[in-house]
Image 1 (cartoon, one colour):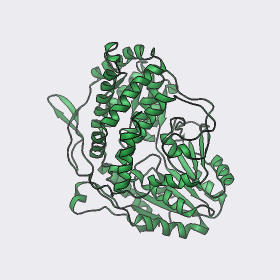
Image 2: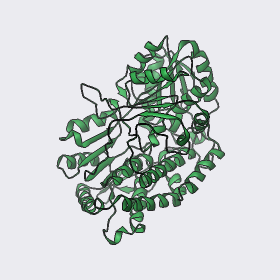
Image 3: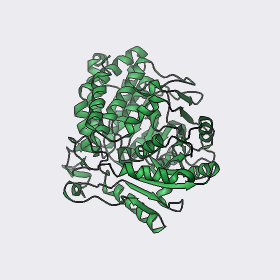
Image 4: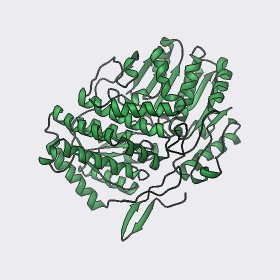
Length: 521
């Protein structure tokens, strides 16, 4: 597991992918040098001249071809995501499902700036949802858009940004994470093939998507190209530390979109539906092994119900299975991506315990047999935590559930806002008016009432970040850009929690069936 991620051969550098679940080495991917990168950006600029002149209907023809190819290649895509990311099988298919949903929406309807709407995914389409949207969309044709994405969702995140950018007429230069380069190569293969199958290759040789490979040095080249006006816009999804450096170095800060880290709060009132709340709490903390920017990482519970919440969390967590086996569909948590990430999580746990936190379950690396091939951590439940601990203030990106109590609404809001991050938050209460009122007070780009996550797959809703979680990083006044999603607690809302519950073979079959058949038309 100490294998170098970059290797040298015949005077060129290559990325060396490594499966974090079993330690197997994947096929090497060539790192592009600066001359190659500049040539691909120029190629994207020439394609943009053609692509931007096409009608929405014509662009939709290309998106439809790409949609069909993803469905056709879905088994290969799911396998590759698991190999590069150590994900459990169900979560690989969820990435594909969301990517198809985004493609389907844009080619069918485009962007809608409605103030109130029902969702578009297979379950939220029937939810009773009220959403406060910003006054206008950010979608526009700016030219060539550079896109730098992280490793935790190697298909879903790039496809989200690519689809939106293409719809408005932009060309895209994508840099996948150096830890998941093969998924980036597959995106390039599929987008090129879709270009040919949609009939545009006879008019313009190249597709509007170029893929460049490399580590942070390639990211620096992309920033230089932005400052030279070779790239017209740059979207960065990743850590707040890197986002800050990019913003400080960018000449035109209005040409930069930052989608940064989170330390998302989960606020529980005494009048909530406890079963729904506990299911969502465990699911939102541990989904993707906690390696999501929108994972719940801080839990604040009203004193009167904290014992019930803690016992319910423990009951569910103790049943979860950890491991990596693409053929075992009942595994709930996969591997931690790399040693650096694993050691950071363990350092936060040691800090918390030294300052008085109590581990009720987990907290140890799993060892022996197949566990020795990767970095696997027990799902961990902590109590007696406070804001002097790194685990309550710094991004964790791991399967940790830290629970803190509060006496009243005012204290719950204060604790939730006592954080330098502000990506998402959620409020759990039986009183919708109270939920909406508290949501308005929380300092986060997206606040859910009685739900989590769903706007990440909604094309109509953008993904703003407050404080150090978005473009407002390093600004004296926080961004006023905010989305509030209120879910009213009906039968469909309970059904939608299916996605947050334990993994089973039936769940995988349903996911795979949706991918194979729901997007055929």
